[in-house]
Amino acid sequence: MLNRRRFTTTLLSSAALGSAALPAWAQSEAPIHILVGFPAGGGSDVIARLLAEKLQTELRRNVLVENRPGAGGQIAAQQLKAARPDGTTLFLSHDHTISILPQVVAKAGYAPQEDFVALGGFATFVNGIAVSPNTPAKTVPEYVEWVKAQGGKSAVGIPAPASTPEFLVQLIGKRYGLDLTPVPYKGSAPMIADMLGNQIPAGTGSVQDFIEFQRAGKLRMIGVLGGQRQAAMPDVATLSELGFKGLEDLPFYGIWAPKGTPAAFIDSFSGALDKVVKLPDVRAKLTDLGLTVGYMTPGQLDQRERAYTKVWSRIIAESGFQPR
Image (cartoon, rainbow, N blue to C red; front, side):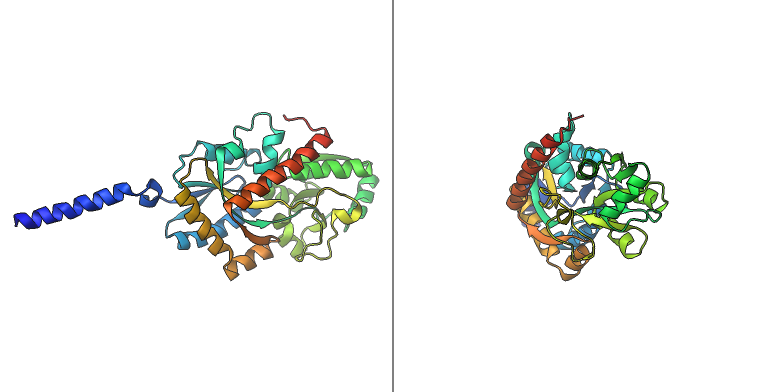
């Protein structure tokens, strides 16, 4: 009996030592929380929930989406910075919060290249401009003429202040001599709700925010950024066709963790993301949302972020915009 007890004790001790030798992220069965900086129902939220469901199966851990809307994703980004680097808190975001916001907000409260580590990217997309049901324009030139008929002034919704959409509104206004006022919302969902109700005549944002309403005939896309027309809406002209140059670089979607997250977790999660993005149903759903799907390694996502930051540093400087 004594020997059996010693044997059992030895087994338990060995198991405990083996568990203690594992990194914290490998021992934990705690859920992985993916932060999204915009409200439920918007494009980023829909994408996050699709990926979370598949990642949960691949990683064999609960993966939950947490919406932390406000300030164009700034609140969620600050929460990521403050989180423990143990793989339980991540951040799904696109270019605005990662590459642009830190350059246009005087005190963003985070610096992506210093505070975050890339886990992998999964798609690029384009921004565009859409009009509400009561706005008769079907193209950008028709929209310009309509605004001129209203006295040359109009309001345009944007999903976040100091964002690509806001700069787009400014560029269109300057080019055509219009007095366009950007009206910031806390994400695309409330902006689109006002557009559907004809509370605001036009709005700008990512294609994935507008595409289902475009297909249903409830809103009309009249122009998109990027160097070529989108397969999901081939009849919508690019702004490059209308003479807008320098906006061909495509924004991106990716997932980040706090700086200091173990390399082993980064490799594990990145590998799982790669597999999930290649699933036919995931690729089909993301493509249907207007995304161009393509996995990026952590290193590739980091390089894209740095390059895109430089592009927008030039655009912001040329616009005369001052951080606020």
